[in-house]
Length: 97
Length: 337
Image (tube, rainbow over all chains, first blue to last red):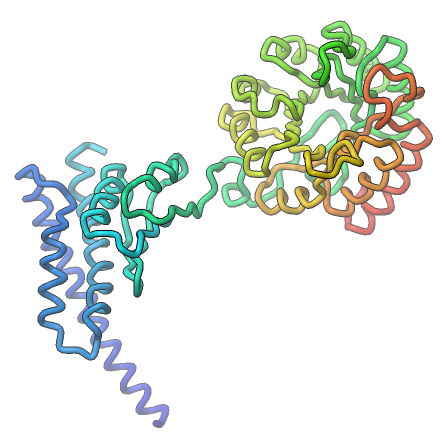
């Protein structure tokens, strides 16, 4: 493979990454909206049942080549970061921390 | 902090641990391995007792990454702390020397020794007034009267003075007379005393207990520092090992290890560290070669008739010779005496 081809593929990766960053943040905006609603309804920050549903959903629709375990690991991190955002931006503020 | 879950930990057990962490305002990073789940705990875990989590069902092991001491740690303050005691400094380029008798025995005794200390070029005079002796029938020290003589002998010769306090009630007289307050090996985990010393405006010489780990020594320093007194000098003075030829085993390795872990100066007390007169000088030389920021040496004009620890006390001539040797070793490791 020539350097030029390598550059072209890397460019594609960069484009996908840009989309991912956009989507991560779009997801985060919605997560924050949800967090406010959860606080209003007196629901806890950590909802393991809902997290499990997410893992089932994303592995069910996973076409590969990533293994389902890999998809779970990626989403674990995404959810961990979302929970952190919910805590710092919504829950802590509600509790006056 | 990292929590490693058991291989067969159930989803409920993992949830319980996570809920507990979140209740305590920690963020959790899960990492699912081939057989085990690892939880990365993000936040200020300094005050957490790992056992609180180790006891939870499904937890295999809890590993602390950050040290439980903060103010004493080099991560917190990368630059070396230099503690000034009279004209001497500990923690800088110079190797600070402290010399004097184990106990202050009389006005004449401490004056005579102070005169010699001055002549040897050493800037700090030691002398015990409150003695933590292994036997209640041994000489217990002169108390406040001894401190007065120590101060007087120091002033006559332009020397700073150091003496040990054993109890909180000794602090008030000590503040009146001494420039550096010593906490002895038998007392260095007396946390009530350490807390009080955190409030005083004098540097503290904190000795390592004979069965105390370096982490425990640093936690003791943290007690003093948490009270606001950051001028702490750590002292290696020998630990108890299976070897009984020597009184203690001077842990030379503590010096470089402490230098890595903490910014506080580290001095060595080979007199107590080995407890046998003719072995004191080799241990003193080794300490300086290993990077000690200072030495504490027991000296007396008549060690054989000293009221305490004569066997580990150097004659004046031996001390003079030692200072010469130390100067050469200090030079070899980029320092001066």
